[in-house]
Amino acid sequence: MINLMINNINILICDDSVLVHKSITRLLQSCSNATFFYAENGKEGLDCLKNSDIDIMFLDLTMPVMDGFSVMKSLPVREYNTTIIVLSADVQLTAVERSLALGADYFLSKPFNHDELIELSQRLGLIFDRTQLPLLDSHLDNNPIESIRELANIALGRGAAIISDHLGDFIKMPLPNVAFMTSSDLSMAIADVRNDHGLIAITQRFVGGGIHGEALVELHGDDIYLFGEKLGFSQTDEYKNEVIIDIANLMVSSFLVALSEQISIPFSVRQPIVLEEYMNSHSTDCEMQTFFTIEYTYKAEILDVECEVLFIMDSHSLAIMNNKVMESLN
Image 1: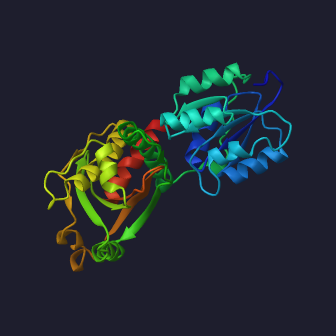
Image 2: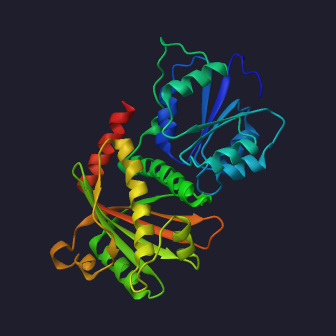
């Protein structure tokens, strides 16, 4: 690791979340010797490293186009030494070990501890001048979807760690897809699930703090029951989907537990059941209703298992979660 006690320090924030760009910039903006660079995926990050003398890079692991692991595998791109601080929601022990093995100097988990990040920045040569408070760049403005995407990303990382601990296998971290969905689109999606006889879909309702919604879990792969066995689940009745239901419950509850920790809202969940006809009730009486959805897929690295999860909530729930995110930034 290099000595960064120089007059000016170039900082690259390589993360697909503009909200993270904003958070780190806001935290370090009083540094009198810092210049900020931004990249929204690993490819942009590598291009920045090729063209600029970057002293410190905050690197996310889960990004589109090129992830953080691939970035570190591609280094060095030139002779200039860069201190790499992995800042990731993927807190699986394997993710930490692989990051350090690939050359990361530090690993900080999301959501990051402000005091820890400031203390590390000072050790790396950043000089804090509280009399100077430069304005944030206008490109750092965020929107509710962006806020919830980062919230979901952190929850997915915590959830993956929970599942990985139970399983003893690395879970490939997904990129969450946060979007709006109309009632008719939702009905079509549910109909497609029902028509696919090669899978079993589980639904589970949840509620808490004015947030209410439904989670839909689809399981694919030849190792589903082995996956369940490794998680400690057993099948006592061959005519029931006990293992499937237990796996789905873990997928939903692990995400909600991690989400609850971030927004300080406890959730209660109903017993998961195999998808039934009532899920397709979004018809004439709510033809124009719009939902917001969080969608992701967990994949085991070794076993042939994919768990696709779709969280469905209304616009009121989106507003509550976005307000909680904004409170945490202020």
